[in-house]
Length: 144
Length: 434
Ligand SMILES: [Zn+2]
Image (tube, rainbow over all chains, first blue to last red; front, side, top):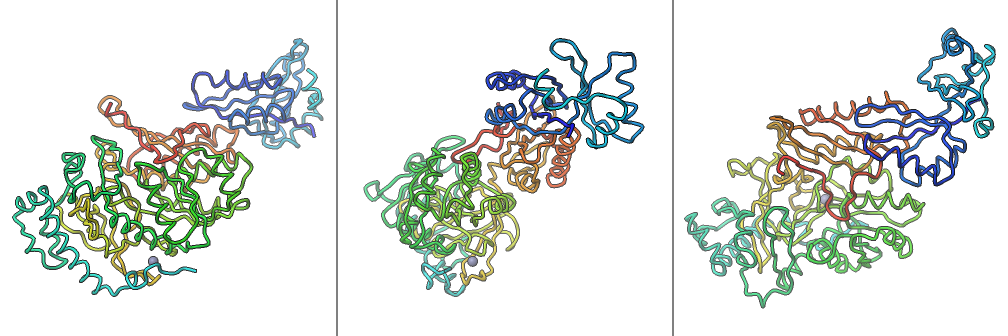
């Protein structure tokens, strides 16, 4: 399966919550690969991809955070004009809905990656592979 | 399995019961008149003589007693016997103003214990049971009251008191507690802690019954407790002025049996002071019929409930009161509308996506009252999607509006962030008073 696990954390909008998340992960030796925050007034959801999902999940739970795991795809954005369009277009043409997406650049700035949350992960993986888009595996995310 | 502690009294024909009440009321009025300058003066002001009280229905001729009277006569000005008759004091912490001191003769303690022995028997507890008393011991009446009642029926008491929750759960397992007595909010907290310890109350303990009270709670909370832990949850009622916790539902869970030989209850319209029809909501008024150091005549206790005089299917003939909706003191007025925390609770507990704990915050923004309700997310239903979370808070707000008729802001918070309580939970924070 090409999908990787994303960790989502429910967080109230109050000072120090983000720092608390970062500390819990840091103390557990877990590195954050990509992160985004979706806000809605009093609360938000922090979404992240880390190198060791299981350890990160456990560390956050032990610190009392409310966490859940979601299947997402990590795809490489080609370093050419229209790289992102290609991805979005092939999903759209095949009726795969993108619920949200966020991008990050790998540590050595070698590659730009996109985390995609779609309504049909399996179908999205097929469509993207056919379009020649590279999908990163769990192992690769750990290695980046 | 479901027996009577005192079958002759508990199943006494209603007419006989009323006659007994009338007789006891007559001697009580004579007694307080002779023993208390406070009541003597009150009777004089109301133009009533002890001889005017001949039968039960004459009770309405008597003047009311108010909380303020207890405060004004602090500490022992309303006692009807000298202190050397008193074998125990309990003191209730007044949330507003001075505390109330209640004194008990040996006979008063025995009456209290008898009342609870009947109650505990009516929910099927007896000699074989281990009753964990997790109410606070000490000046608060909950701990010692239940303790004596449980011992009287021959059960084994595990007097843990409140707090030290992990140890309570260990002892519950090791000593095989079959029943627990505490506030419903503390039991919910205990269940949370047990889960964190990897202990399932349903599978890993022998607990089968909970006696929950000292704070208003709802049928929806009962459902939640029963479904999540597999125990039967019973409501208990009684305030420190009356002695302490005194009455519970029977195993049929259909109203709290009030022992009419011991207490005379009326439900009145708080505005007019007139008794309301049976089945109508009103304020509870208490007259003690067998209590001597600190008797009460038509005491306005402030709890809102409904009286039901129909004999119960369990065979008990004594009147029942429905679950306490709240206290007139607990009622908050938001934009001119009366809100009881228990109404909010009954809405929240119907929504499986939110946790067991909540807090109501009332504040003033400019000229307007704003009510917000904090509820905790639960891990099992946490969705990563913002839209789901928004729609959850909208659903809660819509259901609250349906019941309360006012708009409340709903704030979703992280689990474990609403303060837990070992005793009475603080469900309302009113910032307008500050
Ligand atoms: Zn009954």
